[in-house]
Amino acid sequence: MNKTGISPVGVFKILKEDNPKEAAADGFNLYVLFPHDSPESFVTLPYRLASDKTFMEAAAPVWEAPKADPAFTRFQSSILLAFKGFPRVQVPTKAATRILQLRIYESHCMGRALKKIEMFYEGGELDIFHRCGLTPVFFGQALAGAKLPNLTYMLSFPDKAAQDKTWKAFGADPGWLKLKDDPAYKDTVSSVTNLILRPAASSQV
View 1 (cartoon, one colour):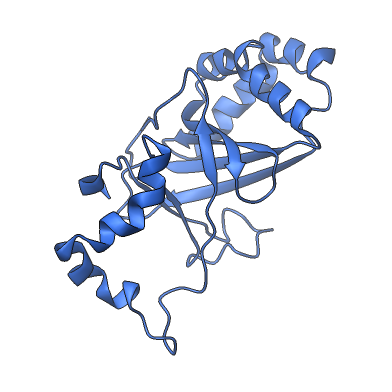
View 2 (cartoon, one colour):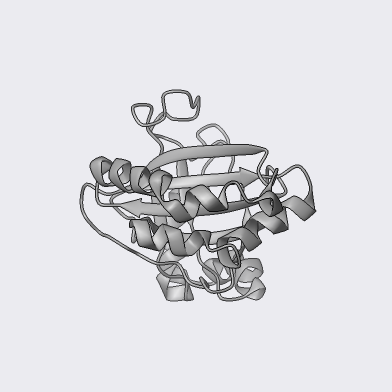
């Protein structure tokens, strides 16, 4: 992926011990993050990979897996548009103990979804994140995929203790206490998906 211009690549496992209510948390399901610079990069990726002889030789067991012994069941993709002011995937920590938190905020209509995105910038929620030590990997508005409309973001922490400490600081921050009660942002989120992910050995995030 790096050879095709995609970097950094994130590869994450979802474990039952971190997500006891998630049926998919079995250590075999993976979340993979590919940052693309353009729509063309996303659309042409399979063909660019297929033209790379070295890659195809290495990938053959998965790329051409037999029907009787598939390498995976299925995969699902979501296309996210990076938030303005946060256009690139960041790597806040590479600690061996690091955890990633993936959060999906669903909205009941597009108007409220866009208002929640506005809340991060014009409302100042992102500034509160930074002030409290919450370190983002990315923020994106979902353009295609499941659970639309939604915004999706990922945070990175050196360890579980750091996650607990910074979220506690966020919850008590005077700016957040004021912002969350602002009537302009009422009913912007109807459902939240909250997952804890662990980096695979190959992950660059």
